[in-house]
Picture 1 (cartoon, rainbow, N blue to C red):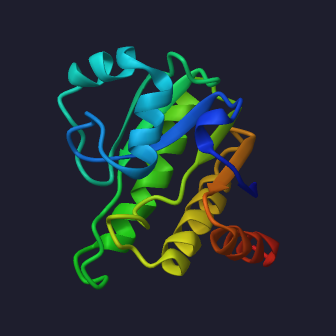
Picture 2: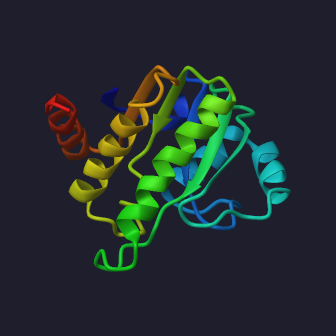
Length: 167
């Protein structure tokens, strides 16, 4: 596992994770960027999926992106941490990893799920992301390469600090 600061839509990985909304039909932030870069075929496939619940994940082709798949997951909106937000965010990561494993992906890139418009505190979200991925690897070593793709330098520093801490 490692953290990088980059545009997630440019990464050559087997699966990109999209911080989607429940409709899966595009939104703002990472979701908008992924839909734009993938082209209109992504939207057409997403229309057939019937949306996605918070904490769940669904997979599509990546179309014009340099990846094989897009895994769409819907993170929780932050309500102070009392509405199961940590559990739901944890599930976003583990369910995305399970889909990647099922589709034999050896590399996956995650954005900072729920930290934009959904208001999840970045430090709390980063801790859950790293914990979920580490715990997933207690039962499997697949997918082998996990990237936390950070938009900001502050997010990158946070992830690097967490990744350098002992398990």
